[in-house]
Length: 271
Length: 186
Image 1 (cartoon, rainbow over the protein chains, first blue to last red):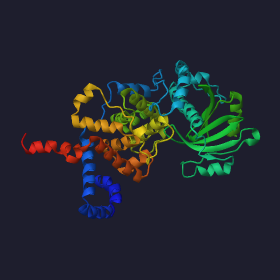
Image 2 (image 1 turned 180 degrees about the vertical axis):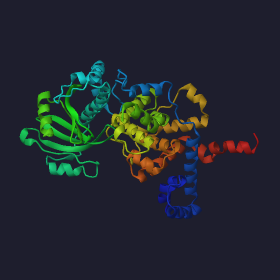
Image 3 (image 1 turned 135 degrees about the horizontal axis):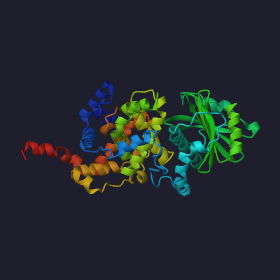
Image 4 (image 1 turned 60 degrees about the vertical axis):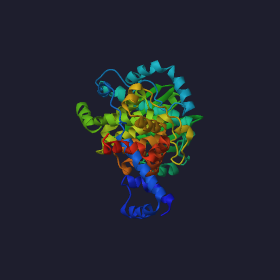
């Protein structure tokens, strides 16, 4: 074994994460290589230091109660943080600019988050009085949809698979998701398919399909959903969204195109 | 499952890992307030998705959500494992909270500062391995990386810390000091 290969696995050796065969070959090399022995000692020393240092953080006082309160959807107040999450200052200048732009509307966010149900117009008649649990949860998802949409426009990463051919886009998701999204092209109706990409929301991987309406980008996020949710439209941070669930799938459609055209597009998807 | 049942089950499987979640988040963002925001938002997302959670390892699941939220908020592009970028890795701020500093020996302060100087993708493997005791395989699952990447990041993170500690480690002073004192009866 060469030192180069030895050093690659010495850390894992210290961690007991390599198999017997590799260990045997490595030990043979260690017996004759002082340099690699020193490297191993360093790995072990640092490992022990990090383990022995008191490097855990205790939960700040009152935080658990704060979490419990925010999870308790019977609580009438949405206690989620209202500011846009940005944990890496300086890494994404353009995101900062967007953040600054939406900051002026920050006071509206609370109102929007709480009032989603009031603002949404439902086509399906649902007579149940809206559960107070719904706004916070829908608002959480809606925030993710808007964040994902903005991000897809900022980074040069609109599509992982750029194709107007549904028979190219659909198979691309095979093996990347544990479901197969419905993919259709609506070029004839003025909503051409642009491509697809993987995205992440609701704590899972989701399929994102990209369409265009003239120069406007439309993102469609879709993932499995057990029940059915009546169609609802909304507007947030200047984007229109349409949300519904049927036939085992949940859909979020978002764009800066006007509400009527987006609704028309949603109806095409629902057919 | 009604709301109360869901909440109870969520507490048992996910929320009981709050301290671990906070520790990971705190090492990502390096201040309490952002860490609280990151954990709270992650728990809300986890709670909303909880009906679909089929696994049994609530801690790893929560870690995955925290990680995804952290990196997607930070930037869409996760730094390449092959690149050890000075710009990224030189961005650490040392903890200057006097209370925190008092609690740690001077040697441990050096280690602490060295970890803070690491890039987030190196810090996370250290936290997951040395603080949470996860296997390479579990870490690979959470970070969506190949095993080889976990292996090399962990090794390079330790190598980086050793370099930050300078010659102290090589001489064995840090590690053997207490032992020697014990032997010599001091």
